[in-house]
Length: 130
Image 1: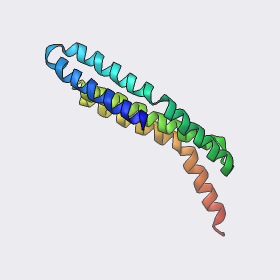
Image 2 (image 1 turned 135 degrees about the horizontal axis):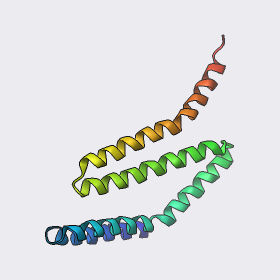
Image 3 (image 1 turned 90 degrees about the horizontal axis):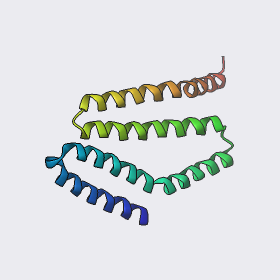
């Protein structure tokens, strides 16, 4: 609960500052937006560590190969980073750049997922009697 209150309050205060600064000094708005985004991500480090710890426990209990957890974490990381970067581009008025970041991230995620999809298909094919 404490984390969400910090996120919301920082977000509201940062947004108000951005509204005030936007018309007067556009370049300062970009810097403020980046700083606010970084500060919000820093607030999430502890909850993110807890999520990672929970995933590791689940993987250990379910005896899932570490490769799959690594893949899952990479995909989640790419998705979050790409969304963050794309929104910075959108906020800066560069929708085309934001869109390209999103498309690029999706292509990278598909490339990462290819070995997993292949392993799943091979497992399914082994289950089907010839």
